[in-house]
Length: 191
Image (cartoon, rainbow, N blue to C red; front, side):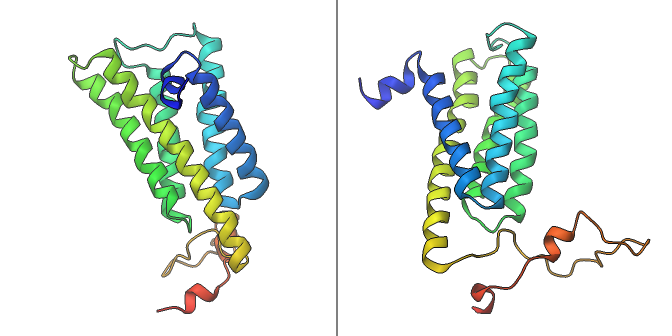
């Protein structure tokens, strides 16, 4: 059995879950904040979301109309990954967010056009997930190698020209304290 036959077989979901849980574990063990955020989004929106959807109704995915529970999980994951991609000091998060936008557009297309075949809808929703897992694996590997070669580097992009992080009450703002802890690295000195 070749890899392509395995991915097209009835064992596809099992293979994808094994790959996803392996990458989630690796991201939480060896990754930094962006890797953990991407992995946590996958865990909550897809693994736990699928479990909740299966508990709510039968195991089938609605293909003749928009699957609203699947679409809700895709839109929540899309919002999270776009926010992570905008602020993470990683390039691969942009690719993961872009793939999720493709999956989100599949739900919009299915809702607007009735002539989309159920197989086409399924492929448009499922295929980006495989690419996202492979991109997460590549990004996590590159992060580990980069950290080994150059040492620690910042997780999030520094935001310039931002307003004063202290709220009017004068106390610390818990939402911006993570950005305040961003320290300059050797890459900040490069022009």
